[in-house]
Image (tube, rainbow, N blue to C red; front, side):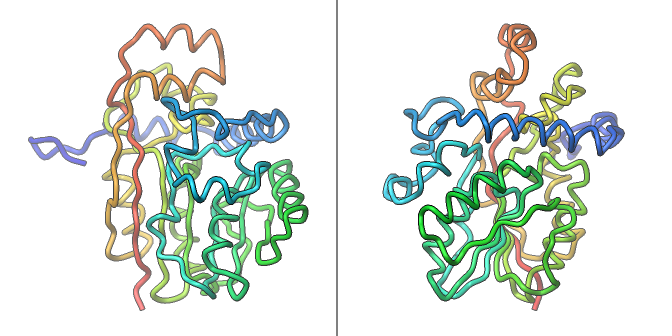
Length: 286
């Protein structure tokens, strides 16, 4: 994104600081955060819609009531990528960072018995939970694989659509995620993601904290960098389908579960309009 003077939002200093983090430290912090979510079973999406929680604010009610409660209970997305994915019966869909499987199960209903949906997640506890949910609810057209989204455990050119919901921002190497998504897609295949994007530089203490990164805030990059990574991977027809700017309460809501002391510090600041939830689509050339 550019200002009126034509400068990209997000300073070079901020981008450099993000990339200088030890990738393994980032991955460890993210795994620990989502392991706690998988084991804690906090029913976020069964609560009324709030500033950062409530699937009714993200998904149509008819879709929510049709999904397994076990998957809804650990949903941690920021949007609904299936809404822009154009899913049809018979398609092969890959969900990067599938967590408890809410978008996998939703996609499975759309692609039908002739299609297949494969969830990829790096947290063993989430994979176990999602597999149990699939088994107990009779989903036979889904599969969950343990792996990093930078190195998707799939053969090249096997997917019709790659989706992701508030996960690519967690990666320490987002460009590699987009390259590997491009690799596993068939020619003409579609990328459809919901994610957190940075609108202006975060305060230093928030940006530098690994807890903030695992909460989908500290690792966010600017629109220009995010879309630039998609284009650099080879995608075309890149389109911002939706952009929702977050208010102070929404950003703080993402942070408060990581550290109560930190939450007390940020709660007294104005953190509105630092980040936004985006829906972005792109196509692999035929």
